Image 1 (tube, helix red, strand yellow):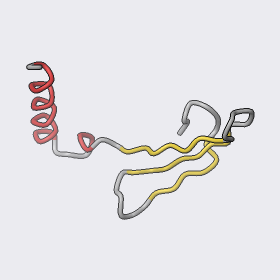
Image 2: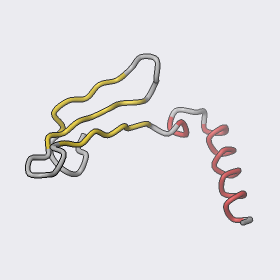
Image 3: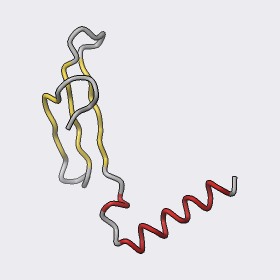
Length: 66
C-alpha cells in the first residue's frame, strides 16, 4: 500500500465499517508533517456480477443523459 508521498507507517480498520482502511505516512519536510488517507473499496468489487452491472449501467445512463 502506498499513498503516493512516503511509505505508510500505520494503517487501521474498523470492524463496523467494512472495506474501509485508514493509513498514515510521515512526510518529512512538508508543512503539517504527515498524511492521513481513508481508503474504501467500491462495493462493485464484491457485489454479485449482475448487481454490479446494473449499478454501472444505471450510473452510465444518468451520466450520458446529462
